[in-house]
Image (tube, rainbow, N blue to C red; front, side, top):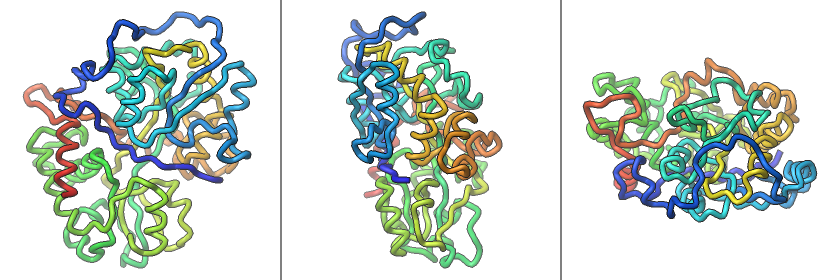
Length: 393
């Protein structure tokens, strides 16, 4: 299986704004935007424009053996054009152009699209394959607002701890391997971390489990004191980090050469490393994660073909191909029966709700605390981005 995975999932747009609730100021006029869900579909327009992560919309041009777009075009008569993006920030700015009908959005982008009125609600009754999706991926906090669904789930995956067994007397089971000073000293200069402000949530999750006095209940809901604690932890970690990564190929190379021996990773990266001494684990504290959502642009010029795409990419055959190619868990048990590798879903813990309960899927930090607190103001992504710049120096 060839992977074209290159996901610098950095989310930072309209950074001077105080919260996601006022992000509409970043977008174009609302006059031509449709935000309510349609009741029925009309005639397909003959084309659809898709904005997505690399590897999500493959038509055989990158690899003749990897093509799920052609079947969609043949079945629906909707010709696909697509553009790949490298960061959630880039995707947000491209979405505002109105040139795309469908957008694949991670949890650090999806609610910003809703708040800025760049996404319209979805009538899931018009997406028959939505019924197959795992229940725990439906109506989630990162794609549902005020009871309205703004997208359909694609695939998901966890941000895991990867390590070279030769550098550890015993296999690590905790994020202390990358956050505890005593352990960091042993691998100074060979520690790696994900290069994005959202990585602050990884530090917050560790503090949530190890320093209960901070009273962190949600790693994406940090008041100023809690953010300061996470930043202090990451500044200390910075002394030991050899390289921050966003390009998965660079992390593969670093672990192959031994330049990196411990750090955060994705399962698909581990799968592509030939060094048998390298292993991964889900630490006892749990982990952050992603679950991407297919969203309909409020400026969609081809909404009927867009709905056809969303239904098609949720079909067992297409979802199995796309998620296996990319390297993540499919969104339904039916898709798991269609993967080329019969062990793919076991490897990525697809449908394992107990495993999923240990994951904190990416959310966009906002002033209104996501943990429900009303007696304090939380920090937003603009502050996280500023902090990340300070951390890296």
